[in-house]
Length: 172
Image 1 (cartoon, rainbow, N blue to C red):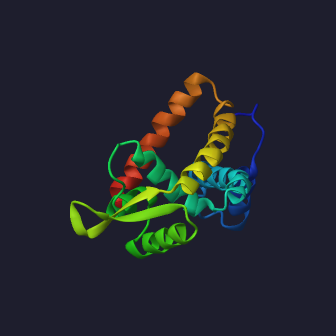
Image 2 (cartoon, rainbow, N blue to C red):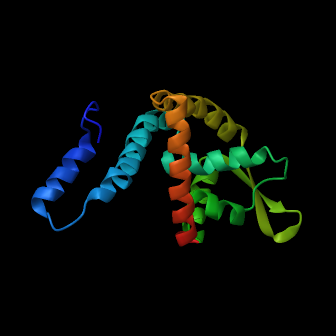
């Protein structure tokens, strides 16, 4: 760690592990711990804006995915297309879709290409809610991103991509 940088909560956690279990290498927390901690902080910061629109982070993730996929110009998104992108099981996705439909955020229609399947689109209520929340979400993300120089951002992007590709290969 650079001496000119302030210590963060992960530095304290690593020191605690070194005291408690010096036989364990807690060095992975330098990266993994910070990624997780950043994710928790970012999620906590955006959740109040999401609640104003009537949804939580999990539902927001689903609605964002549908919102983004609607730009493809298709007749809606198939549930099977949502599994991997939302990192959900079939049962988890079904429950989330049921809630989104009950709350009036999505509309399910029969798939014209597959009579047994469904296509999902956002309702006007869902689209309006996402439109309002996404601006706040992006602004929060940009405020964190502005902490880095262009060179730092490029380096971090390259390294995080390398980690994510590695983890996604293991998970698939």
